[in-house]
Image (cartoon, helix red, strand yellow):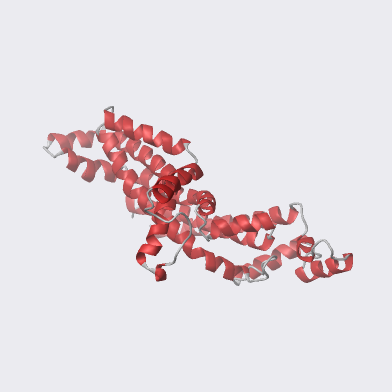
Length: 313
């Protein structure tokens, strides 16, 4: 088990290095000049050259890459080209809302999807199975922003149960914090509930046809015990995998959801940076998202040791 863990951790290092190089090159080679953005349309050529010199843009590309990665290793992502604030401070300021939204969404998706998938597998071919599968198709088909606008129209504008938009930290009060996360979490969780429920259903149905399940039934175990004690546990590996993939996929959904519900998180930060062509913020946030993605997949790999007897010891 220890060797498996060490091997997985070491394999993540070159992936992170490659991600950093790709992020740097894509932004450096894309059209646009950061010096022109900072200097504005009235800047003289001499002023633009001075800006490029101060930002290190006149140096060879390889030297820029080495200096940038060295600064990242020390936790320094540079200064925002628009606000002039440290990028690290901007990320830390926006990290809380995104973390709260992501954790709430994942928790909701798992708590809803796993029971739905198990019930659909247990009632295979019956009306409840068809209902769950139809709901999963709708969850895949309808974009998150449309679900978000529908929820705002019905539950915020119509019934007035929740605020329309915005975010409040936990320090503002539990209800102020939770009420502003309900609608965005529900909207963002729809496709992940659909995905996880379908995977759970498929794997539980496959496991239910195994010989040891028939043996458990022959011994007189109740159907509920067969599902919870045998079927679900043996179907856990692909379920854990798809939950990990869903967490990683949240990165794209967070950008849209935070924009719809006006949540000042990392998704909004990267969108604002793209519109303002703030390269330092863009590359820092993309690198952060990519690192989170890599470590989530690493965590899923390590969880195999808890469920797969071939690598447990």
